[in-house]
Image (cartoon, rainbow, N blue to C red; front, side):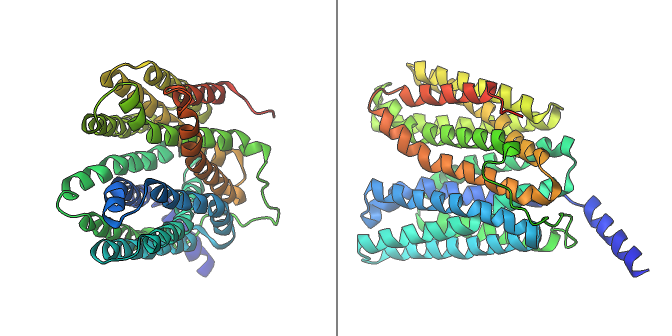
Length: 398
C-alpha cells in the first residue's frame, strides 16, 4: 500500500509540474544581471574605476560560469535537480546581495579604488559560480518533465522570460538610477530571494530524473556536438553585438555621445522585444529543433549583414531586430536539441555542457569583437554573420 501511495504521489507531482516558477526565476535573475550591467558605468565613475576594471569584473562572472556549469549539471544528475538548483540560487542570492552592499558602501565611503576593484571581481566571480547551477539545472528539470516534442516550446517560455528581464532590467535602472544608484541594486537583489522561496515551495519534491550509470559524458560527445557549437556561436554573436554597437554608432554613423547612447539603447531594447516575439512564436509552431536552429541562425545572419551595411540608426535597429528574432528561435531550440539527443540519466551533464559553451561565447566574444573592430567598424558584424550561416548549414557527422 505504501508503494502504491508513493507511486501515486510521484505521478501527481509529475503531472502538476509547471515551468512558470522557472520562468519567474529566470526573469528576476536576468533582470538583476542586466541592471548591474546598466549601472556599471556610472558606478565606475563614482568609485573611480577604469572601464577595463569593470570589464574584468564582468569577465570573472563569465569565466566562473564556464568552469562551473558542467559541474553543477552533472551534480544534478547524481543528487537531484531540486537540491542543486536551490543551493545554487541560494548562493547567488547571498553573493549578489553582498555585492550590492559592498558597492553601496564603496560609493558612500572613501574605499581605495584598488580595493573596490578586487571586491567587484570577487563578488561577480562568486555570484557566477553559484548562478551557473541555475540555468543548467533548469534545462535538465524541463527535460525530466516535458516530452521531447514539447521541449522547444517549454525552453522558449523560459527564454521569453529571460528576454523580458533583459528589457525591464535596464529600463528599471533608467527610471530609478537618476535618483539613486543603490536602490536598483537592492531591489534586484531582493527579487531573486523571492524566486528562491517560490522554487522551494513548488519544485517537485519527488524527483523524476534517472540516476547516472557510472559513465561520464565526454565534452566531445558527438551526440551534443551540434547544440554545443551552436550555443557557443549564438552567445559569441550576442556578446559581440552588445559590446560593439555603441562604438559602431559613434564611428560609422557619426552621432554624438548622447545620441549614440540613445541609439544603442534602442537597438538593445529592440533585440529584447524581438527575442520575446520570436520565442512566443516558437510556442505556437510545431517545428523540430533542427529546423528552428537553421532558420533562426539564417535570419540572425541577415540581421547582422543589415547592421554591417547600415548608414543610419533606423537601418541598424532593423538589423538588430532581425538578429534578435533569429536568436529567439536558436536559443530554446539548441537546449531542446541537446536534451533530445541524450539519455535521461545524462540530462544534467548535457545541459551543463551547453551552458558552459554559452559562457565561453560570452567571455570570448567581447575580446575578439573589440580586437577586430579596429580593423574595420563593420568587421565584427561580418564575422558573426558568417559564423551563423555556417552554424545553420553545418551538420555534425553521425
